[in-house]
Length: 634
Ligand SMILES: [Mg+2]
Image (cartoon, rainbow, N blue to C red; front, side, top):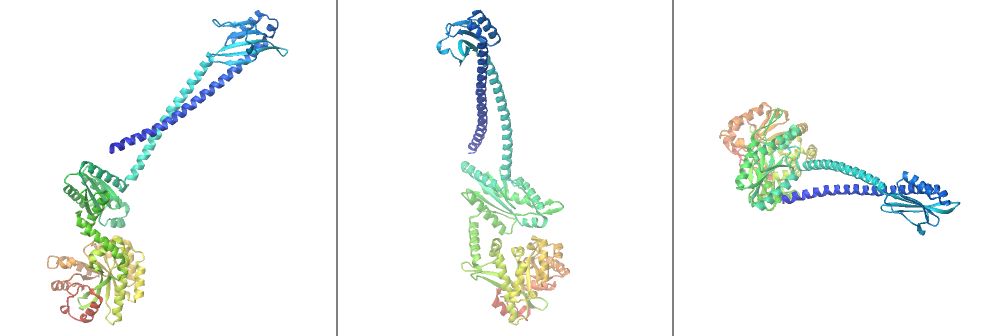
């Protein structure tokens, strides 16, 4: 195949080059021949008219000779003319064609009578001679004839000279043209290869781009078919790379991608092909692998290892992680498209497992991916089918022992799968963008519900609603919130928004602006799942927030060695004037410990799991004034 292509390439180039040279050469030859023909016709016509004039002059001078039939004078006259002209033979005839005088070069034939049909003015241009007959006239009558014969040697010699000159000029022109063509072809080749390079190369990393990747993968699979070997495909997607671009700018992002590409090339084997197929997506095509899964495994782990080293740009140090998935040809797929899709499924599975991980494709991943697809398509209609509900989990103030707030949590009652866990459908909603209408719905429903509790005469509490990354990026968020508060009649002080650290860090400057507007509107703000993301004191100081929600994993570690961290978080938050909510409180021991450290608010199964609105209303009515020990776990 490769050889075929090579020969076809050669043939095409030779054919192109040959045909253009041939056409140019032919054009030159044709014009040279035309010029020679034209020149010879011109020379012939010049020669004839010259010789006719000579004949006329001799004729005019011969009148007396013919009148008196003076043969000696005729001979003298002919010799005097012939000597100075290129005349081979000259005859002077009387009116009845009788020879009066002749002049001829050696060995030239003699003649007798001038034939009757030639006794008139005329000429004959033969191959070797030009013959001219001119009448000698007296008082308008033809009294004799002059017949001259000219050799054409000189004519041919001159013509040959011209032909030689034209051919030399044409040849020179041909070689100059050939040289220019050659130079032009070189330039075209250079431009072509540069265009080809641009079309197939990623400008940031100099790696093959997606276009080139598709070609190279097709070649690899074809080679694998012929040789009976396997091809491994490793797909790598950087985790949260957008944060780098957003916070440090694209110049920094590009520099990191370039460094990354160099490290990937080091991690791969010399026969592997590393390509960049998207903003933060890379692939490694592993050709002719013997122990497929072992080879792929070792390269994927090497990739994760080289990524683990910090990346330095300017004075900054970055830690990049990636989710890596792989698939094998022909084990997992029979064509390139399926192979890519399966590596993507495996990569996605690694992402779901908490990122910075490597997964080999397994058939059950397809089932998971299919379920995701099914979930996504039915999620699109979940709102209009009233399948979404909010469950409420109380937040208890540890000093007053009362419910001071509630977190509204989305639940999906799927007609086929039953209750789908938010852990499963929220990521689907995030990726598909459906989280925006869903989030808006949750915000409106929670506000409406809380306003309803106000109307029922219960003491006002705060409802906390989680904001997703997509919602935070939506430009109309502030407007939507204002509209919802107005429509539902809920005072802004009774609404709290929860944003995770990860979201906060995605676009620090614009988020700070958003948080300021929310704060100005009188809405409370808390940082959710605190401690799991980029816990940075410097940023905490810059964000206008009211409270931190300590992630459940820290609460879970109480009495398992995690006490010091909680103590530190509490002390830090209090020093910044923030109140602290502990999530996931499940035991009395945890509660006592949190209370001893001065934690402000708690939330968790120890008090109640998230429950439907009607149950929460009953809980609110029944338990609002009881001691925590009297709480009934939901
Ligand atoms: Mg939350």
